[in-house]
Length: 284
Image (tube, rainbow, N blue to C red):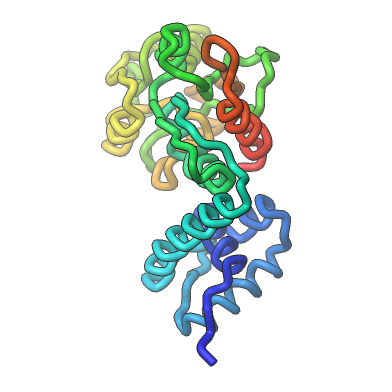
């Protein structure tokens, strides 16, 4: 009898692939690493191919694993849509959601995939921009909901806190530069303000080498070795270096992550996404 792909095995496999770690995936879905390892072995037996390669920093997908991931994501999407339609569950409609680039790169895939499985008939339009620009769009009624950054010390329903860190190209340090070249977001953003205020307090000379709302642009300049950036710790790419303990750099504050609703009474769909984010974001 031909073997078939089990939905539960595929769901665990996709979670591992997204987390790049058995331990993180196990925490997110409430299972042990041993149980997930057994599921991966069972899936590998079914497809008769190795799917994961374990490294010192987590797990990587093999070529066969990458191919299966594409199929698994489509299978799960169609499965969840069918279940929601047949059961009569799930909300429909469209909402406009704002999110800063650094959070979008790390958190959005998990947040939106989970929300889509619960409400497959819903449509989410995503706008990526720095927090000040998102707040402007909230005020203009252009967004229904936004994930924003708040300064350290704010207690306005913070869902998660993220430390700001200095980031540089491996092999370089702040002492290599005079003045210190910075790659920062726009002047009214928290990373820009925190970096400049901390350096001025330390008496350290600096210059703005690059200022933009583009996270990709900031990271590209850091990769070139021409500047140091300030990012939330979770958004630091694996090929860049957190400059922790560098005596030439001051300690930076953390930021809080919170939700801001658009004007007027939130729709049930907006409330559902907000609650989904509150439940899932702290564990990502």
